Length: 83
Image (tube, rainbow, N blue to C red):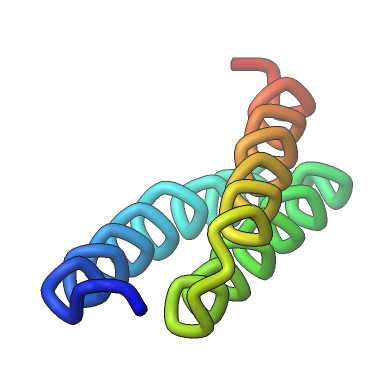
């Protein structure tokens, strides 16, 4: 079982980066009218959200896979936006 203190930090990181960075990508996609970028950002936010449950269920490989998916989809969103 994971240390409860690490669970708190993991959730804080997921909330901070998931809401601020991915939410910012979603807002930029809406602002520029890029539907594809919005859906990539939405998929990234969903993967990051599910990664929080992987932490609680003590599934490190699932966590890493979902974080990888979130990173790739965030990068795809940024590329579509032209950053």
